[in-house]
Image (tube, rainbow, N blue to C red; front, side, top):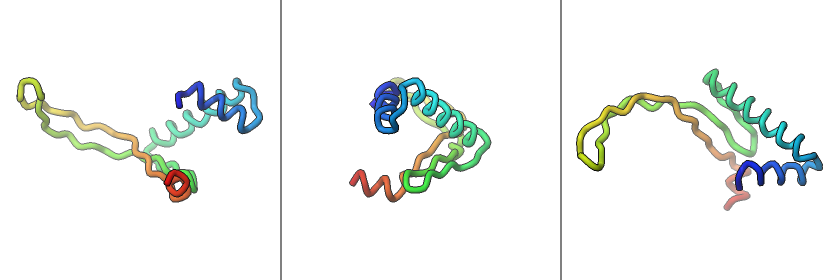
Length: 90
């Protein structure tokens, strides 16, 4: 499912226009992004939680040449599915 299909599904399930569903999805994305930028954890009970963790700098290898390269540290977004979502999928 891509973004357009998600907007269409949200619009039909909630009885909204596609424009309203798009604005709602964009507001959700903005809220989650803002929360994660602050370093907070965003939990949606039953669905899951988004969090940020730090991946330390490390040394890797270029697979073509075998030469060692330095990989910089960075923040990564993590998602952990909630129990209700997990049980519906399984």
